[in-house]
Length: 74
Image (tube, rainbow, N blue to C red; front, top):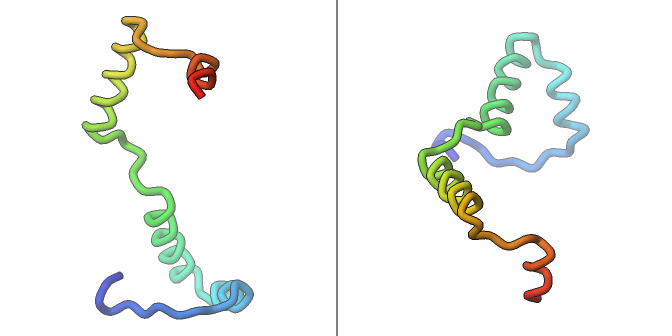
């Protein structure tokens, strides 16, 4: 949390009431903050791309087991 933040406990109903009392500019800012928190970048990292490419290569080479085989290993 940033230094100038405050952690409080508030009921969902009180939070809803507070949000409804905001003006449109404040609601838009809140929406931007929530979207940034909830929907962080969906771009794949270089590590993710490397891992997917390696898994694809393994699959093409036949280096995999089926779900049924995995379950049978127990």
